[in-house]
Image (cartoon, rainbow, N blue to C red; front, top):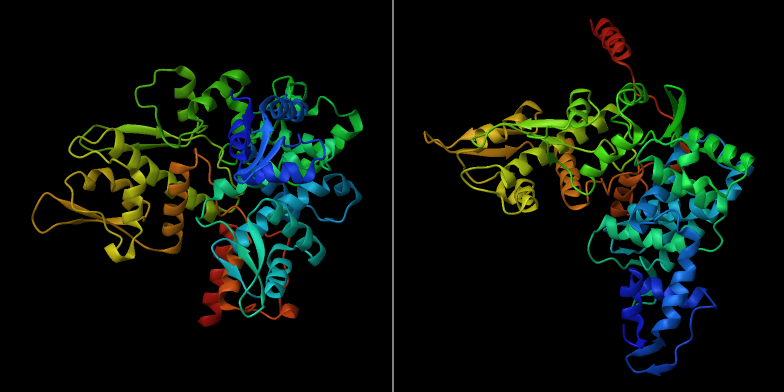
Amino acid sequence: MPEFIGLSEIAALAGVSASAVANWRQRNPDFPKPIAQLKSGPVFRATEVTAWIRSRRSGDSKVNADVRRVGLRLLEFECGVATNVDDTHSAELVDYEVSRSVGQAARLAMLIRGQDVIEDEHLLKKVAALELGISPPEYGAAKRFLMEADLVEERTTRLGKQVLHEKVTRLDHGSNYQRIGELWVQEKRATPKERAFIYTLDTLVERPAALNEIDALDNLGTEDRKGLLELGSNAALIDVFNSGEQRLYYSPLLWDVGPAKLAEFLKRVTVDEFSALLSKLAGKAGVDFTDNADTIVLQAISGGILPSYKVKSSGGARVYSFAPYTGALLSSDEEKVVLDKARNIVACLRYGAEAATVTRIRNPLWVLGALTDRHRNYRLKPHSELKAQYGMLVTKQVGRVLRVDRSDRYVFELIPTEDNLRACAIAGELLSGGGEVMGQKDPGAKAALHLVAGRIEHPLHEVKVAKKKRPARADELAELVGTLRSVVA
């Protein structure tokens, strides 16, 4: 390592963005002072900076903080509290003020993503209050965090008008969450309880664990630990079930695997074996387990623990499996159907990239881009393998397979419905985001449409934000249809 380094070298050394280093210097009086100020920027002693970074991270040595994942957990924490906790002004939540504010900043970032310039910030405040439940004072704190994360800035136009400008030039959810996570890790006002909550949640979305196995809880007293777990339960983020004689905590964000099914599976395997199984799927959506003879893998697939999809074509049948965690707050049946379609799409693309015999897919994302391009009529180029390879997508009503004249070549055409297009977007995130869904986590994300129109579509006094919504059951829908038919008759 060189004796002297600049800001870009510090960012590379710490594995953070340049904006994070700028925030460190601004907000931490103990950050090493530069030994010289050149035109290219300040110069620091490498040994001093390295020691400062090491001392800063020593407090989090047990939790292996991946800042992007921390950003995801913060968003999920705030969504869980806002959606499921009846009293969001409870005194208990005072201990989680920073995490809530940063989580609200993440939700606000989703609201304004792709807007480039918000010319009417007063409107933005109204939409945030109406659609996201973020009050004006909370909006101010969330906005401050977004500015500190270098995601937005205030600008003055040539005409002297104050606007809010989105600084991200390319839509990258993962990068946004990384910046949000960095900000929270740097925030010294965060209490031990909220740090313990976020790291506990991150542990439990990875694997079920007994209390004594969750390192993040080690430094909490009995009452604080009890309160943390109660809040997690109320926010539908942490739950517990009995596996034999042991109580195991897990996150309901593993919604593919219900607690009863998971408890049954863990009677046959240990938690460590289950964790090892999940690690095989980490970082990649759609792992080929066709020829895997591991008994635990086979039990997990047959028991529905691992969502798995069989693709057939000229290269033979292949089975592609996914980690059960979705990385999102998906709860309704409609959202589950969309994710199921997305996984089907990923499995088909994995087959084309890894097992096709005539023509291999060089880049699945390119194919996905062509499939969602209306200028291409949502079609892929004719190919002999498409009929079998994409046949499973026809049964899911994702698309059609059309024969080209009387040849043996076929065209796959996407049915461009809203849910199919969203499934393609999620498939793209699964392929490029390390197996996790990066976007569309927040039920208020569609509120961005209000900003495009330049007005709120409904008068404030006519809108009621429902904190809890239960989808109608099939028997209730059938009863409603019967009632309507009798009225019409």
